[in-house]
Amino acid sequence: MQNEEINSNDNEVKYVRTTAAFDCGGRCPLKFHVKNGKIIRVEGDDLVDDENQLRTCVKCRALRKYIYHPERLKYPLKRVGPKGEGKFKRISWDEALEEIAEKLKYTKEKYGNEAIFLPMSGGYLGAYHSPVVAMVRLFTHFGGYSTHHGNISSEGAVWATQAQYMSPFVGHSREDMLNSNLIILWGWNPARMNSGTDAIYNLVKAHEKGIKIISINPKYSDTDVVVADQWIPIIPGTDVAMMVAMANVMITENLHDQSFLDKYTVGFDKFKEYV
Image (tube, rainbow, N blue to C red; front, side, top):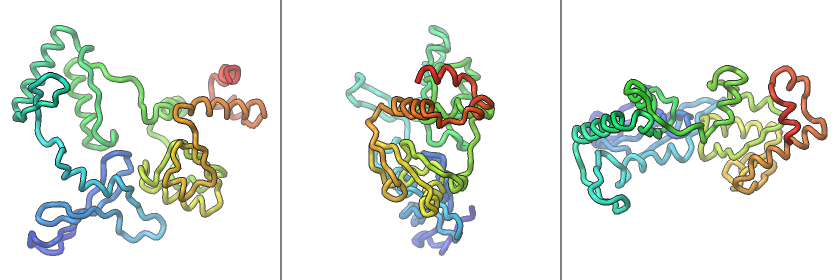
């Protein structure tokens, strides 16, 4: 995106257009108001588009506080006391890299690569410059590492799409929600945490179109207020039990499409016996 500048004077406000490769992966377009080299306001998409203006959620609009938070970690700190005391001292980047490298070599030589545990994060995992990708490449070349199993965010979808489409990177466009007869929001609150920049926009259009929307969520969310026709306040931790109960009703009342299941799925008979 091209940046806009009101005046070359540093005391004047400059506009910098960017995007949020951060959090949910919506990659919302942002317009920063910058004065004297500091962000003074975060604005969402202000470009005219009658069909689909890309609205940012509150997390994007709070980026200024994230960037300038007084407790933000901006340089390496080394613990100087026992664990739990919270005593640290600032060290240089060179010192940090040297100490980490020595610890890694020592651990690899004495215990093997499986003793190196690498939990990773850093915003949206699909971002072009995601640190997760860099760390995976580095430690793979180092001989390997251990990490957690699975995906707490979307493990079910990852396995289902890989089995069905041979890739986890699939899905319908948000506009396709307008072709639904029923939409179920299971623990999803896109009005507050997008997960697709145009998600709430198309949910509102679906609601206005008369498509029934049911929300299953312990909390009555902002999304529920705007679009939900029915809110089911499920007890936390009982999601699977509710899903199995729903499957039981669909099977016992013969509400499922058996021909579709026979053609496109594997293992339904075992699942049917289970529920």
